[in-house]
Image (cartoon, rainbow, N blue to C red; front, side):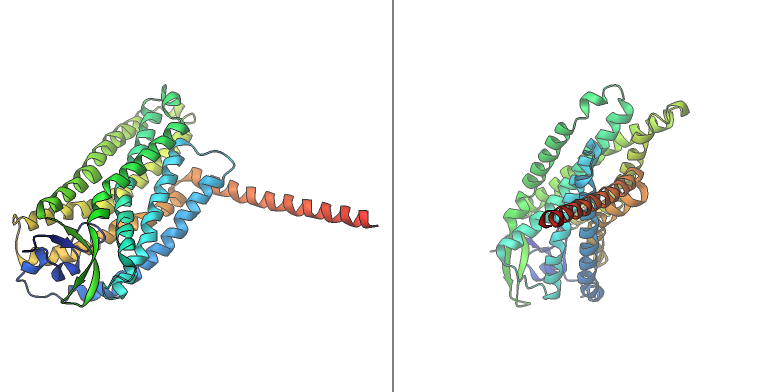
Length: 354
């Protein structure tokens, strides 16, 4: 008897393909719902839109941070790596859009099935840990102002980012291992599925996602944010000018943190409800249908966070807007210098030929 458990979602949640697999969806006696009809139409378009806009926005952020004449601060190193993590996710979404448009018949082969899913999983873990780093940086800058010069060094920041990428890759190993192509006879498609060897492994992966991918980092972020807010309120007006740069950077970080939490909290709460449903703690057709619909809505709400960050940098980040203006001037000056040099060379050649 086949004892494996399958879910084909791009994240470890439910998906309409569950009803075609050998997982929990097969045992459902609930009537079919028409809720998926509008999702089939909406999702590919939505994924393509946020992919295109998000890739443009995050590339713009990386260009500003990487090509500005001044070296990046520690906070900017973390934010640029967050933009890179968002790019990784956004580059994977068009594959899933194509999968939807192709009737869930995965056209890209087994390797891409594993790599695309692992890329999305890496973003799930790495993005929140980059936010842990950036909130920790703001905490040190505002709460431990006397020692932040020793603790906030670009070299340490780069090593921390490297460690986060390594952690994200390590935590994505289960997705890379359990993703596979499988023929689904009922629908005559070869689907890209997450197939776990048993329910216990599935449960362990979900618990790892909740604990390491959300609860632990959110506790760290919440503590740092609480101390940051106290520090901002406790600073006297005469110190405002001295701390103005740090304040501007902190307001941007707080906006990015708030957007992340608003986008990702529903996804992780639904993961908990889904675990309870699989183990029979909560039951009922209404719960099952709500899980089916909300798993899609909340997954793509989470994906939207990768599009929001560049928008926040422009709206909230005064220092970022200043960098953009300076970069534009820098490029304009470089073009004028290059044009002047070409003109001088042309004049010299003309003079020499005469």
